[in-house]
Image (cartoon, rainbow, N blue to C red; front, top):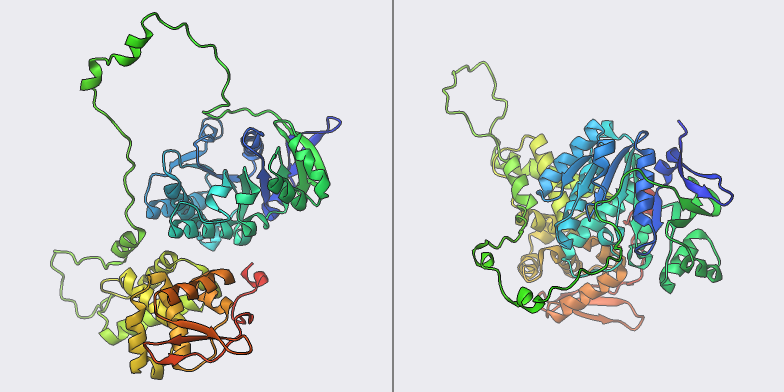
Length: 508
């Protein structure tokens, strides 16, 4: 069904139509400095499309909660645990309910974690519930930053990974990303590049104007026009909007945000005793309790998942001894339990995309699959899981695993953080078996990134810790030596293409 919604007017007073069906397949990027009318544009889009498609809004400032009054959106408070947000997101998809995830009151890192968990919940819904959903993310540069900021690396990876899934792989799951940002330069390029439709508003910085011109296919000299755009005026391009850059004026909206642009107001007449009024405390101030809002610290997701994975305790009521009925959950021997856990771990790591998922996401999938395999007893702790994943990714064979050198390598790996153990053991295995030194891309994949520069930084870090010595031969090939193991890799080309890495088309 082809539905064109009215976004405003173009030159000549003709209506500016946006094809919703095409938008669901091609995604949208909105850019504009503060005060350019970006939020007004998103509200117009949401209001016009509300009768036709399910909507999910990631709202960092709580501006879009007013949609609930007129259009029935469910407001979800972000002050919840990750497990709660994932469960709510799954039910949102099951019942096809439009919602607003408000993150107001949370600090930046908590907002990133909450948004990442909620988006992952939408993304991981069962195939039978892959109905079309318009996923609008305001202030997208916060959730998909181009570079790391003051937040922890773990929070950044969770949020960026969720945004990448939304824009790169969400289409097949019915998720159509609409992302809005104040600064294109601050938005991760792999996230912005997946949008095929653009609405560019007023922009002043040269770097943002240049990127906007590139995305619209305009000459760099034409980028100056973005400085002259009025509030609510945008340049549109894309299969859902126009095949050529088209200036449009966004139309009016029926709802309004709780916050608004500041307006000048005259100051009140100053009282005669203004100094006494300011510097003399009110007696009630000493008796009034000081209330500061401190949001509760969410429980770690791993603890919640571990609780859910524990087998249900037996009832205290007596059970009739009916030997004819076999036990549904027969106790597993230690060998059988280990065999099933190893099989589950192998299934998860066989996925080419597993190398680029966080340990917490892999751990969640591991626990779910273990329950499906009827693995009884306490779940594997997160620390042991990370350790086994690191060993598995190193690809060590049985003979090497039984050697004294490998046991020494395992002991040395404790000196680095959990996320670096897989890289360290990969290099140690290559040295013990006298294999070629892994390339930058192979090291990057073991760390869960596509950045070759980061791989080189990891080698520098290991060398600073006194764990390895990195040098090159006469042909420029790299060698990594382990003084404690008395072993080193054979020379390897650091720029060699990683043949095991999935292609971009395969990732789609």
